[in-house]
Image (cartoon, rainbow, N blue to C red; front, side):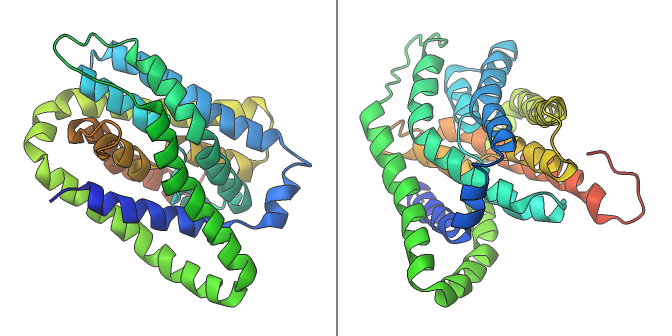
Length: 288
C-alpha cells in the first residue's frame, strides 16, 4: 500500500479543520498583544530546527534519517495541539493562531531549512535532490488551500461548518494514528533496526523542545496558560505534513525519510499526554 494515498487526504482534512477552528476576531486580537505569538513562532520556526540539526549531527544519523529528522522539526505545529492545549487548560485561541501561522510560514521556511540541511550531509552514493518549486506548490495545495476553504465555509455557513468541525475533530486524530500504524507495519524491520539511534535522538529533541518552550515563555514573562500552550505548540509537530513531503513522488519520494516522523509522532504523543496529565488530576502540584 502506498502511504502517499493515505497521508494526502488526512493532511487535507487536518488543514481544512484548522480553517474551521480559526476565529478571525481572536486571530486579529493577537495583533494587540503579539508577544506570545512571536515567542511561540521563534520556538517553532527557529529553535526546533536548529536543535534537530545539532542532535542529528551529535547522534550521527544516516543521511536519509538526518533529512527526515530535520524535516519533522521544521514542519508546522500539529493540529492536535489545540485539543492538548484545551486539556492542559492553556490558551486555545493562542494555540489555533500559532498552528495557523506556523502552517502558513512553513510553506516557505521548509524549503529554506531543508536546503541548508542538505549541506550537512555526506552523500556518498546517494542522490538526493530537493525540488524547491514543487515543494512550495505541494505545500500550498495541501496546506494553504484547505485552510482557506475551511475559513470560507465557516463564513458562508456557520452552523453547518460547526457540525462538520465537530465531526472532523473526532476522526482526524484516529486517522493520523491509522497512518502511523500502517507506516509502522510496512517499515517495522527498518524501524526496529534503527530504533536504538532514532529513539534517543527523538526523545532528546522533544524534551529539549519542551524545555525551550518553557524557558522562552518564562523569559518573556507570559501568563501561565500561555506558557502551557507554548510548550505544547513547540513540542507537537505536524507529522502528516512531513510524511507527505518525504513520501511525495514530486519531492523526496522516499518512505525511509518519513520514518523519523513516525517515531516522533509516537513519542511526542506519549510525552505530551504525560505533561497535560498533570493538569487533569485535581489537587496536585502543577509544573507549568
